[in-house]
Length: 139
Length: 139
DNA sequence: TATGCTGTTATAGCTAACTATAACACTACT
DNA sequence: AGTAGTGTTATAGTTAGCTATAACAGCATA
Image 1 (cartoon, rainbow over the protein chains, first blue to last red):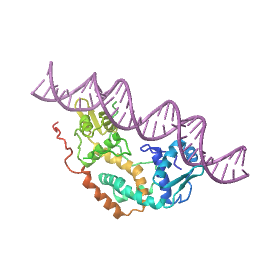
Image 2 (tube, each protein chain N blue to C red):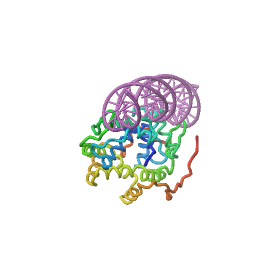
Image 3 (cartoon, chains in turn blue, cyan, yellow, brown):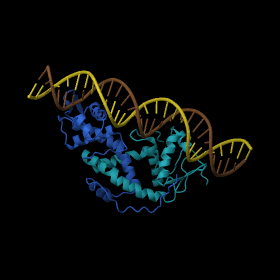
Image 4 (cartoon, chains in turn orange, blue, brown, green):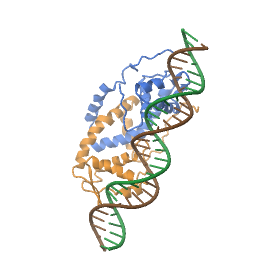
């Protein structure tokens, strides 16, 4: 399990995204309870408030419901709501930027496919990158 | 012209990314000066320090060189260095995540193509005119 | 020398994100 | 009633990002 956090985005946002991914992947089904705030906080060594903030986003989006003393439960229709909303957001905001980058770098479908497969394993070694230029060290 | 900033990333990072894009697109060529810190700050209504921070990243990456009293100039070999580095970073870090999202949402190539096209109209960075502000271009 | 453009540094203040610690409120189960 | 699990709120402190304002330092040219 990933215990690491991407430095380019707030933790609570990444937390929200992970739950979303789990719902879309069917790991968490409608009616299921989310992992408890305290559990997640302990597991990932993060402040409970941070976890709560991520969960609250999901509540605000109408995806989960909070039952005090019980837990937070995934609403019925959550997955469908996500498939609509996330698709729209991705196509309108994220994909155009990514697409432009792909064009800019001149990446081929072959390269992209290869990189996508390599995903599950942690890519430790990249051998082929030739750093031809000596780096400057002024400061 | 985009005066808007993406809320999901710090401005200085986005600024750095824009310059990188302009280098890759050939809008800025090696040896060219970057738009001055003060100009950019005024144009985008942003603090000069924020601009400087973005530019400093480029210096740290060995892409541009700073000449006090003159300006910041794109190093020779910058474009090549970028094509290497950005490709590696994108394939290793960004693409796997994006690819997973595409899979998860069940997006088809048709939908992706359509969304990609809808973007270039509002983007404008591809045209040859680098700047709306008339700049001195002698060196 | 004076002006006007560059990059750079210094102070100080604001907000968002995250943290630590603690307490409160509710529910289920024994 | 007691306990242990939930979510929730309160207080307070740290850091990163951004801002405003001002000054300092180097280069080119009239």
